[in-house]
Length: 272
Ligand SMILES: NC(=O)c1ccc[n+]([C@@H]2O[C@H](COP(=O)([O-])OP(=O)(O)OC[C@H]3O[C@@H](n4cnc5c(N)ncnc54)[C@H](OP(=O)(O)O)[C@@H]3O)[C@@H](O)[C@H]2O)c1
Image (cartoon, rainbow, N blue to C red; front, side, top):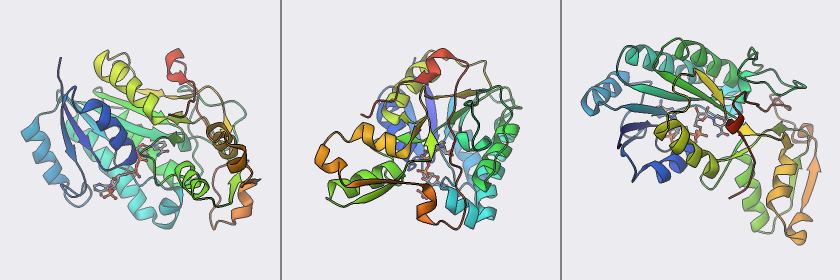
């Protein structure tokens, strides 16, 4: 059955991939910042929701770069915490399901075992902390599902590290790549198909509050790149280094990653 879906943050990298797969199957209304700034004009968003009356609301808005959040904590808390908390309060008791994305960054850095949905979060960054505040509020309402995600790799993830490195390599440039920053990366192509089938159509996780979707294997950024690039000549342009080599002002978590208690949420990472 066709559902009415409101995709908020439709210019986000993930939303671009999701909309490719949802677009012709459901009645999809896309909202970008051009349509409404959700922090400055939440009232306008409320009116759009009243008028469109969606069955499902997918929230892809976020201040998602770790460094942007450290440098601009106020915006991080407004976008990643206050706005989704307001959204959850607004749709509470309405016949709308809110699907919200969270992150591996809500967990402590360097955990030996990958955290499942049962592990208590303990973020070390403003990004992780701001996202966790939203997780706590959204999980209190009945009509919501939080999907925590690891590093995303895919054709629309252009502002992310993997695509930036691949672009340089394709241009014949030499690159330095971290061999000690870990995640359990997933392909957004695989994720989008899983999302449409299991979350939207079969509603397999309808009764759950929080799920993790991740790959089964923890991989460093260098290992992800090596998995994607097969050409030996291109590979010779890559030098693996410690993250400390990049001398960032802020310390990025090095060992993240997720695991799920739900078997089919533990995916195999295949670059598509
Ligand atoms: N990417 C990852 O690897 C990853 C991993 C784990 C979880 N997640 C989560 O997945 C979700 C989507 O991530 P993403 O990487 O697709 O995000 P993204 O590409 O960084 O896009 C975020 C979007 O939010 C919009 N936005 C920010 N503030 C806004 C405001 N005040 N009003 C309206 N729009 C606003 C931005 O609009 P503009 O384009 O106009 O700036 C942008 O389109 C986020 O919740 C993120 O935390 C992502």
